[in-house]
Length: 287
Image (cartoon, rainbow, N blue to C red; front, side):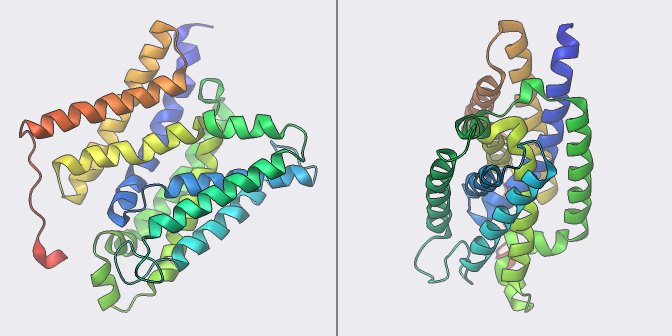
């Protein structure tokens, strides 16, 4: 097999993941829930491991059902712990990030307990962390593309609701929207994205795809259209550089791609410090 044949499936998979995750990352940054994907990924992992308790094959569609059910629980908890205060908790004094961290820790501990009771549990936990990007197959890529296309249409149709709640929550409250309900819908769709992404890329890469491009975009602009373009472009560039160096230098693909995201963020921060692409001040009327 030639180098191109070997690296083309990981490249296509990365582009699909970047297209979806970098956009959702803009919502994550705006909502100030940076580690929500780690928590949802761990809930999905707990669901997948729990399926093994019922002797369900790891590659079975039923395993995804278990994972999605646990993700739905996480989505419900995150929607419940949001208050009228942007990024706040139900009590108004505890940051929502604290609840997200608690869910992650408890789900991780529960996953360890379940893994000790099922055959192949340790292998399943390891796969959650590192994924299997280099060995992704075309059938898996097609399924991922179809699912993400459907989710993309879903988010496009409801873009006004999701964008307003993420970027201008006071405006959403003023219009009387049921924000907790819409939060649940958002986090549930978010959980589906994470559930499909983690087995391919692993938790570390998924976190990088989600957060780093959004952070880079926010360094340079506040305009939503430009945010999306910069996030997509920077994510694609970091992925291409990581895959290319992995192939030419014979280095592990996942960790190298993550490092490329980190280096690109450093470069973006230096450019921002030099005054390139100054971020415009937000309009006070929008806040």
